[in-house]
Image (cartoon, rainbow, N blue to C red; front, side, top):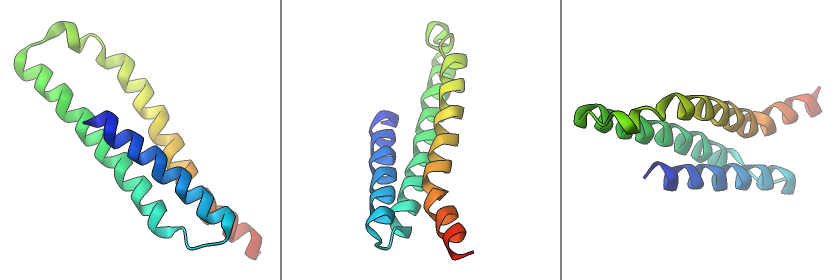
Length: 93
């Protein structure tokens, strides 16, 4: 599930950037990109929670690797989604 939500978040982020570049209203796409990023993180947390409940230690060994990737991708998602807002403010000044 987290993979599907992550792909939707990536697509929404690119739609956000495209709409900004085209000069159209991008704020709904920005909200969708950030929302699906949050849902992806929740889905990943649920997956890890299930591993803990089942005491699946072999799966839990991979969690530290996922953590770094999730932090990086979340930061990139936030920056890409708010970039149009920052660029719009910069062009107004």
